[in-house]
Image: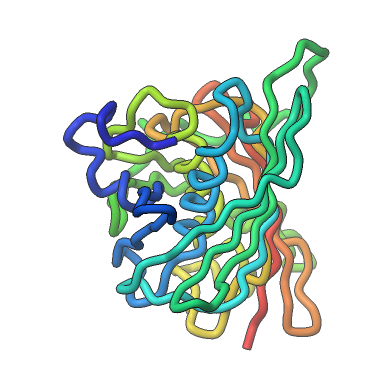
Length: 268
């Protein structure tokens, strides 16, 4: 849970973006205008995860989320969050979150929480030729975060690319030393795929006016701070029938995998 009392002064904008507040018996969120008049999907994911996390014991950290974007939401109107406890087991918890605006559902999400357990460790190695963010030019974003772009991998003979979006990113606003706050911020960053969904033209940010997210899944493999540099590697897997599917891996500064994502998009 993002707690304003534990935060330093720079958190104000990030607190509003990634967390919800209690208003009587309701949980309410507000969207920043970083992306224009519509609520960016990552804001909904972050706030829904915060709302769910408020109902889970502290020893359980976020493990996964699966969300469907149902309708566009207005960034100038409040968002209301309803959480249902689907499961409370000895080692794991599942929550269902409905986000609504003007009494109409805009997002449905299931998310799970569980504590770490001892066990063997394994992961796919990342390419070693990716430069550190200190070797790249930084670019400020509309909100309290920044990029250091690496760019897509070279095109193969058939025109396909192994990665359609690669960049380092981090929050520039201070966050409290609260694991839940960073999980919510990671949920937001996991939806920032830039032009990874549009493999036809990677020279500039895509025209998103005809592209909408249908659903989004994310797994949290390791705890991490969202205000440290994270490397995001996104692959556009397949586009057909007016829809596309992409997947991505978020790596920490030590280059270990922090989160993995899969998203489906619709092109109009």
